[in-house]
Image (cartoon, rainbow, N blue to C red; front, side, top):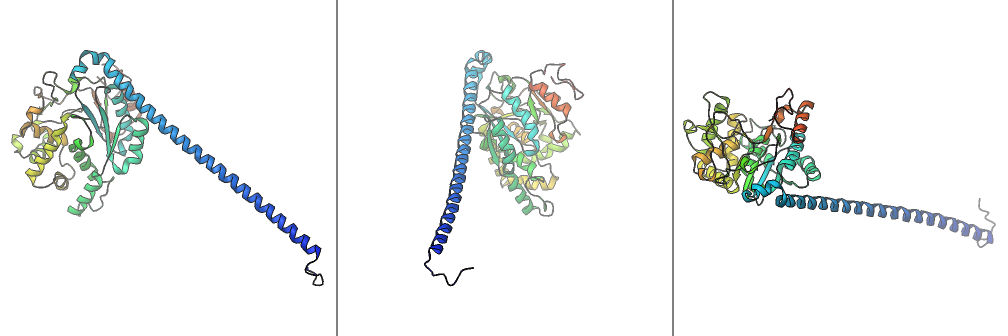
Length: 380
């Protein structure tokens, strides 16, 4: 307790105040030094992270440039190029339209494309819903930096359009969980020219498809006319293909169902001139008096989810509405068997261990008859 009799300016009081001041100053100095040290550590950590990110970006750039150099070298030195591929080469871009649910399938598809399609095509574009960029987009950019990515807003647009036009049928629809996703992927394929840059032709592959051998010019084009092949088969009366696709395809392209003799969705690897898509969309809009997207919305509502097939529609339009001269038409076959080097499975069935082994075997290049044989059959 302070002694009131002690004079205010006594030496004891002065010494006590000086001691307290020095102690407080030392404490604050230590705290300041600790803060400076912590800030320095944070700055060094941040600088390290920045440098690490810069190195990663540089590594990605080098890997991409190395891949491009590798492809360029193959195009000039590969034996297949020296034989007939160089003279026959035309600018082709592959389009793979996918979504997050098919991500595991996409991994196999792109591996097969990297092995068997390059350098015979000029690029690969993977298109997916905008909501899947964090999954599909991130995977493609990390694992396959040579492939382009392009987001689609069609799913959200179709969901909103369906809710507005048919609220009693699509009241609970939103992007990612309803039929609009299926309509969106159809529409995106019919707009392939808007997604695939600087390619004269667009080659379609679904993500549940793997190539089984090196792609050749004659797999896609007619060697004589240099036009893309468009195989077709006759509709079998009473078949599933007939009741599912014939009437709706005829309606979309503006012909009578009885005049539509052929089906055109016969294989993977169908290829179209880039300019053909715009011609098709404009013709469909003139025919139906509204945008193609609106026609698809109403068709989805009236058919409960089976509005049309993009490949049936494009093939029928080419054959019956004035595009025959843009394609080569092989002889009509009795079935849809294809010589195109691809193995396609339904992604809806899932990927089990057996099927994974088959796909690994195919990508390894062992897809000759008798190899890759499982309970699912022989890949040939």
